[in-house]
Length: 485
Image 1 (cartoon, helix red, strand yellow):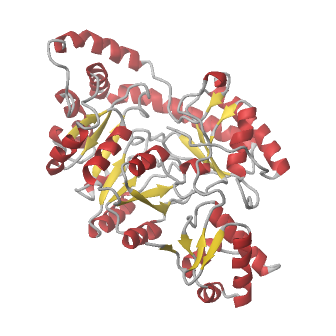
Image 2: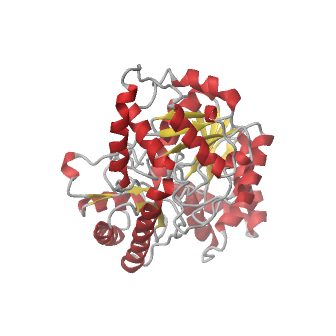
Image 3: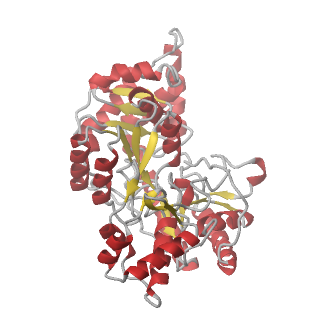
């Protein structure tokens, strides 16, 4: 099914534009929207007549604007079908950086990975786990659904949030990403459509794609959830599954309100769409605010994945799936084709941490809040033209770069990431988070490093930005795909 966008929606996105001359201003606005991913790649644009009426301009203005967009490489006219958006270079990923820096990068500050260092309580939890381990050495050590005490501890987290949960609804996994793989294997047939966000978490999108899903995207604006667009997209593509991050969305940091969850859940129920809700950042509210109810409280068919990797430590490879009881056998059958469980030591350590999560999280959140605030001050001082929304939780800033549309080829975000590496900073540009391509005026900056490292990183980014600005996003060397966390 071809994706389309209404003339009214285009007019809203374009807003005011330079009318001297009008066709050039409109073309520039369209190129920027396509390049940023706000009009995704492969979208059929409105007819010239429809857009003329919506914008209140002449037909000639729209005709010449569309021609200019095509000439810039951001659209293609198909005989008898209309004008479709495209991104020069396609949806290729912008970097080849793995999750960990390579040997030669040890001196660099790696901002690719939005994961904190371990709080001091982690060592104590492992020590207690080691003391308890001998009691399990007489067994085979396999717990495909998870150790009962950890299942109960995770279920208690949901009980405390107002979502009654039986421990039998919990499957312990080696991280949330593993949970996504299990759900996809159990519920998505090859060729099924799965709705994902753009920008969104790239590793989850790749897991779904590798399972044979056909990804359809819905836009997440930097400052707010666009539920009008999301609900329209659900009706347009009729997906089997929808993967979303309502709690401090990665990478934008947005938090979906209760009213928004209720509305989106109602649309998913109407379309018989199963939500895969990633709660990996749910415990990372940094302002002491009350959190909305779990998404599953509004859609009982929701399958939730979670993890302690972001809230405690990335080296603690423990996550989970929470699902309706009638889905657990199907999920377990799919799970044993992928792995046979999580190491006992890690499960024991996690169970200990979850006995009193606030004992670890109170200081951990305070440290993250200090690092966030320090990063905000540093970016505003060194890069005053960059814009971003200060997130109330999560682990990163989603920064929009100033400047005109990049024209054909790679844009500012990718060029900045290339140049930043030369200045000792590894950072993920917007296209990494864009399943459809685009978003090359954005960059994600985690605040998970020490404050002195963040200051050093911002100084390197500022130097890199000056170099990129001087050459206006010139050619950058080709890259492969990045793995980010």
